[in-house]
Length: 386
Image (cartoon, rainbow, N blue to C red; front, side):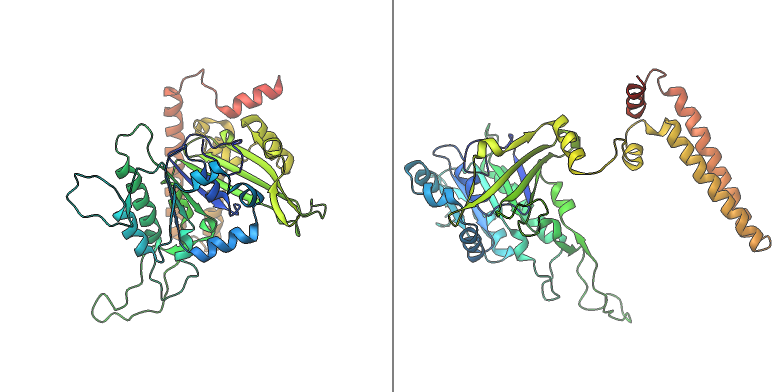
């Protein structure tokens, strides 16, 4: 089973694509590659060799120091191929060049990009380093990042067509939630004749929201800083949390793990990993969020109106009527202040017509809505009253 920690427990749920963001521990991609089945191959594509080695040295994972030279680990590490494409263009070319060796293939293959077997895991490490820091000399856009993801997914599909065990794809990017890129490039020259070339730079947009659409699971790390953590006892213990969310599922079904990273004898290790890791199910996750935050027991109004069926709830209908009434009195008062400006009377007529159409639509919707159907808010209210 796939994992991001030294021991086999806890293991990740079955997945085909996973994106990991946040402050994850630097050895997580290494543990992920070593967790492939015995004899299987893994590919690790990192944006920079120096940054990867430096982060591993600074983190100083004790398990890698003591167990990386054992027989089983050495056998697994020999099946891991690591590449360091220096630019996004090099990465795209490399992903397009990967092939498995076939004696009957007449097309000459690149020796460095030829694989002896189909990998079971593809790991893309820190692609945000290609785009940070942002400056005007780098004409990158949101599509530049998405292109890397789409090529990696295409490679996974190409190398394992119709396989019962398709190649899994994992993206590790600690700066994904902070990365912002422009949607379009600014034209270097005016597009139309006579148009002045403005100095406006395109507004950067968050990349994480679009990247998440490509993946089945999203994992978010949250590792506290022992120096700034208010709950720290000064021993240097780092409290960590990993939340796994499956795209399209309810947030209550998220998987949450908690653990502590304990420094000991200048080495950082996971103490009693299988015991200190707490996997919280749906009910426990709700209890944990209530204990860690001061949220009230009642769901927020915004989350309530987004639920299916809330459009017929009396609370929502009252809020709609109140909004229309307030808007009407605003127009009425504005007409009084402007001594009967006809524009406000026209706006009042449009607003009243819209209000009437909404009321009519609600009445028609109630006719087709089953009488015995209760919204989730009503069920929660009935349970509390009982």
